[in-house]
Image 1: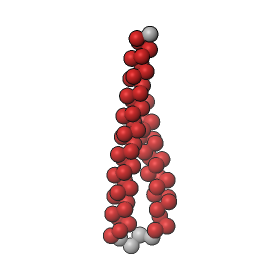
Image 2: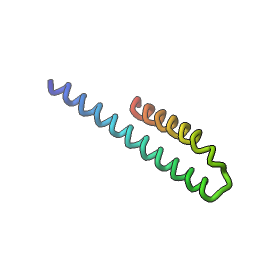
Image 3: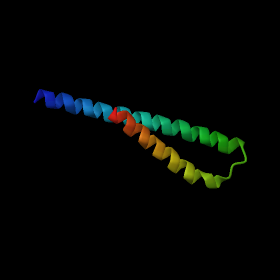
Image 4: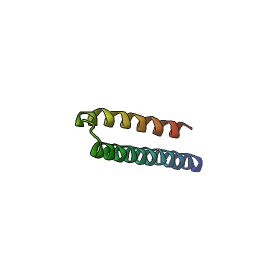
Length: 68
């Protein structure tokens, strides 16, 4: 029973770490994009595709970190 609880805690720790890494990556990327959007002549029509791409990359990073 104790081994199961240790495995459960380790899994929860790995999931939490993966979510934290993906959130930090997402915030940093979107902050950089907001700076680029503010100080350049990029159209605001690029916001939705950039959010989709950043979210997809963030999910992939989280899954890669959780798997290994």
